[in-house]
Length: 338
Ligand code: SF4
Image (cartoon, rainbow, N blue to C red; front, side, top):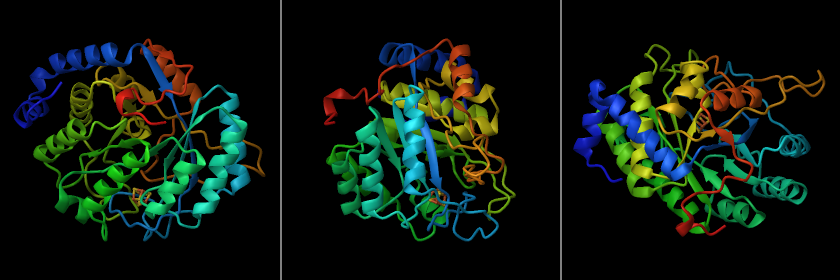
């Protein structure tokens, strides 16, 4: 349902109207996405990053961060283990880490696809366009790349050396290649205004992404933004609800940063009020045997809470959702190429 900028700003700023907003979002979710929810198993395989985003603990200037990389075998083994648990989407996520060459990523995609009937989502940041093409040809289905904020000045302040237009061009290019494309924003960035959030929602309305990942700003003590307050949970919930209303059937994820801002309850509220229909549990092998244990946390936010598969299932059970048994491809079928 298309909304004007004025209508979006009204709902963002009028708390007394939020129950009405949440009812509408939930009705849209029910009508366009049904009562099933999707679990995406996330592998954070590297926390090295060449970017220096002010809000992120993985920024390259954070010398206190304990860095790690998984090798190819470890990534593939983990993906197959996740698939054996019945999870039908594997998300391969990392910082922008060019240590992993085009060939390595393609090999990983092919090895997983050969052995498991899963969809693969990549979340690797900006790469050369030939890499995107190769990843698609190797069998990747989806690409997730948040636009972070539609305020160009704020974007360039928060992401030194990066341009918003490059990000948006990359999203368009990924769509042309036939990827199911995901994007998303951060709610509560220092300096962000209500107009900026309205611009994010209008972008969602215009671009109609296949997937959206909305998360709150959370100050990290090893970043220049350490003294700023976190994003406002209630405002973020209204952004969720408005996003559901303007995108109808986009897969909308309640990110792990939501659970960091408000443990357990946060993701549940995104499901019952904000129109969410996707959870992305962390599948890194924190609890494995000592020698295989990955000694790191993907700490883009401080004490980031990583929701396990079991915790994610609890959230969905409480929200009254069934877990989808299929791959949960984009519901925007008219545009779908895969
Ligand atoms: S948000 Fe992503 S691209 Fe930016 S510094 Fe963190 S890991 Fe790197």
